[in-house]
Image (cartoon, rainbow over all chains, first blue to last red; front, side, top):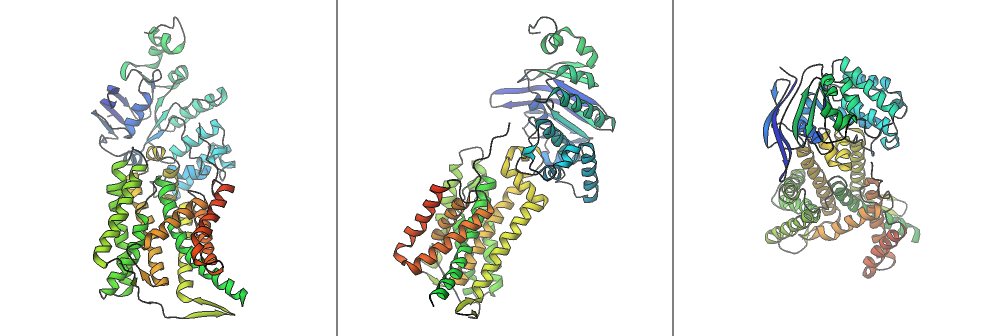
Length: 242
Length: 294
């Protein structure tokens, strides 16, 4: 049984169909990446999995429980956590308050404090600025804070929406190292990325969305060699639509 | 003599200001977190005084009557949330403003039917004990009310800055969509905020009734609008701004009544507010509009 099982979900915004019959699985310990152009429905997919946009049809199970109708806060409490697009750091809160916010639904105070120390050990830049407003962090630091905040929720599956967006190449490198590291420690990851090459290099499986539908899915190495994907996202060959 | 009279008026002004302050903080919670100018709050202020008056007249012990008044205000506030605020989500922010104004009119007129439009004498509950410090006379009720108001605001400020629920409230205030993505249960938090602001308003109404010993169905209007003014002058969304604004308006009102004359009180008070807003459009403690984040 997969940790996350999305089966045949559809989402529409008014008359626009954002997702059509999308299915996807993430198993324990896996990194799955979802690729696709702008507007393919990648962010909508993650929000639908979190429960922040309503499904028109289909179902979602997480950790053997049907969460299709569960509110986002219930899913997050189960360990299904999103690092949203654009990081969504709370700039009127301090760095530490942002981290604590990630643990707001938890009641195990001592464990929370221990995990916060571990996050500070991992991100010394955040530790130095813990009492400053989060607005004073650089883009890369904000991304680290967003991931740290998600870790405070004790995730079993972390969904990341375009985490590399707007980061310097150095930070992109660090970010992907971090994702691999977290995954090695047992965290399952569902990664939405524009940086197709990087995403395919770390993923165990990949799914390609086009206009709200799954058009390709499978082994990332096979996909990386697929001429259609190369043409569309990897910049190889003719830039003609597949 | 002149000096002690000034000191006396300052004490009186702070007392009145404490009531405006509670109202301003109630409005600040509503607008700062929910972006909702909740015009039912003056009605809930009035319920605080009138319901307590009704139950005391009915023969209930004073503290039970107070508790009942607070409970009624909280319940009515939940109705406002359910029928004026929640159905209008996603629409224009002006719509719930108007429907909450509808609640104010409704509450006033329900009380009018029941009690009539006259001022009712609220019984003197606190024995007429006074502290005398030099030439200064401070009523025990006055002092207690002032202390209670300040403690309430201090506690609220601590709650918002230092508890997990407080952080969640500030998150909703900054960005409601982000709050949902962070797993904040807005379906639970929003009604809680309505109760909190209702309790602030109703406590203000109770303190008003106890200190000025009069209640009426329309007692909320003047105080409510001064509460809004206090919030704006203090700086929208800032609790300490609301505190400062409330105390300032209370002081300005009392001092201008005693030193200039009761006829011109609105001219001097609102004139002062106008001058402050010309000099500092964001209010005394308001920050200039925060930068949009990327």
